[in-house]
Image (cartoon, rainbow, N blue to C red; front, side):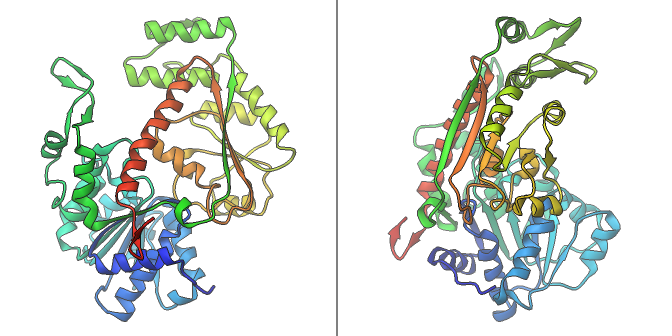
Length: 451
């Protein structure tokens, strides 16, 4: 296919070419793969500045999306690639195969660097979904940091740089610029820009930004960072956000309330307890969805309110395909018992969905999150169960609400009234504000004007 780049795509490609370290915050649907591949082609095959490129991406994106993009565009002809995923023997064979570009899933970064025995001689590294390196304690972060001085060019791509707040940014930029802008140590970054928020005597559970910290952080990273919102550059389809409230009966709600207040509840001769706040949050979300795991991981059924609402929504779609996002396995099992559904997992599932052959598809946000192009098969998402993760929430919605979508996108949230569901929706909206502020502050200036 002929590549006729939008002005913003040319701008972003040039930004990567001009900046050996580049953080490119591109919202979903703006074509970050082809933007980056165009820069890689120029650096490798025209300028001869780069010999060997490593692309780190989520599993399905490394397996399906990047190879499809390389093969799709005429101007990338001659750029060779090798996909290093699968069993260890397959990965080793792929890494030994001569190619310009090596694609690996992020779970195998530590293996590649510390266990594979393959010399790390990549002079350019692209991290597709930079946000997957937000934890400075993760093995993938520590391993990549060890070899970072050997890499001449680093590109970080993401649409969700600070999905859980500004604290996420330190590790992401530490891996990009080796600590030049936000400091080499998380403790210094924390002390400079944050103050303790929630705490219990000596134990600090969370931090909040100091006054003016946001602006200061954005200023520090602005020279190597560009951001673009799809709404600014593309004619995006209309998106309608809808909340579908369901009410628990008095009996169901009293069980929910008892667990919330006492962190333990007797349910059908089973004692369900939550050992801490995070566990309690998980239990309450499960109960809002209609079932809960006991200590033996057995499923205790509570109600079918959300299943009934889901049935109404599927019926109301009048045969139009719907995509149902679930969180817990017992949600999936109960959905499967009630409806004829198909999980979106394999390349064939994606193909069948895009061809309109799956009336009701189910997807888990953690596996659907990044880079899957499934906007052609439907325009309705139903959130059966919610997630606290803004990143997974936004990325899942962006599977359908993106360039190439021909219809108005409708995103339904089934919300159990007076439960933690309402808190999650509030938190997602609040986190969205922090992220929007970051993206707005480093927006690309194209043709001298801020977009």
